[in-house]
Length: 124
Image 1: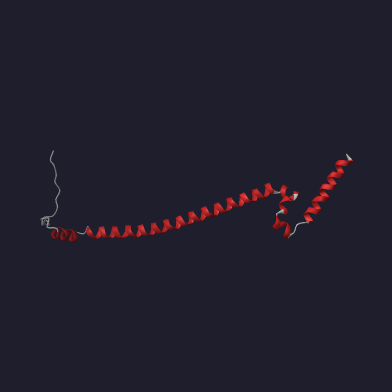
Image 2: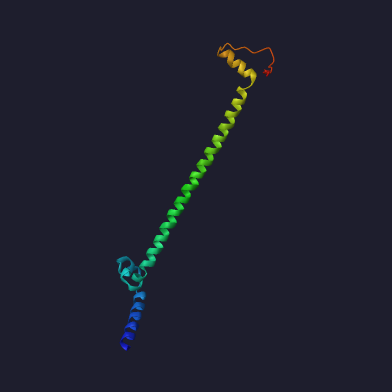
C-alpha cells in the first residue's frame, strides 16, 4: 500500500515538474506534446476542433442562404415591376380605339358596328 501511495506522489510531483517545464523551446521542438498532462487532454482538444469546424461550416451555410435570399428578393422585385408593366400594356391594348387601330394596321377587314348590341331571346 505504501509503495502505491509513493508512486502516486511521485507521479504528481513529476507532473508538476513537467508543467513547470513549458517554454517556447518545448513548443517549437515538439517535446510539449509528449508531456503526460497534454497527452491526456488530446480527446478534449480534438472535440474543441470538431466544434470549431462545425461552427465554421454552419456560419458559411448561413451566409450562403442569406446571399440566396437577397438575390431572390431582387428577382421578385424585378418580376413584380415587369408584371405591372405588362398588365398596364395589356389594359392599354384592350381599349376599343386601340383595337380599331390594330385592326386597320393589320388589314383584317373588320368594321365597327353602327348598331348597338342586342339580346337574342329564344322562344319556347
